[in-house]
Length: 172
Image (cartoon, rainbow, N blue to C red; front, side, top):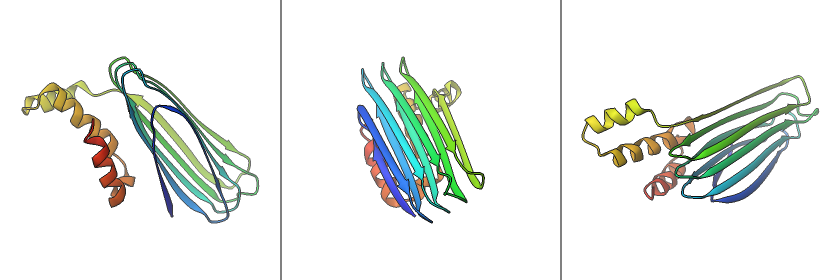
């Protein structure tokens, strides 16, 4: 299975992938935005042949007045019988940051397995309180929970991605 890691930066991003017969691909999209950052992502996965498999995992977040828009589309063409597609998008917002998340499935055949999920949330005040009661300062507790947000998911077992993610998060 091919894995593609995409680190988002502020700005506009258009990403399109086409899958052939029995091709498998995992796409990981990660990004953290702050201040007045504005980011727009349009990600399209097009299943063009039978028995293709895609998995899209998105973890983005923002703080301050950051603005994030994520539009994801999975298209399964009529000839893509027995295709499998999975999309999971999670967004973490702090302060006055805002996000718009729009997952879409466009299925043009009957014999497929496809799913999508999207959530937008903030830090749990109970978790912040718990960490502060164990001696962390408020900013340290917040930073730990942001790191935990990015470390969620089965994709994290990849050692190369784990190292890159740890380096990225150390700058937050």
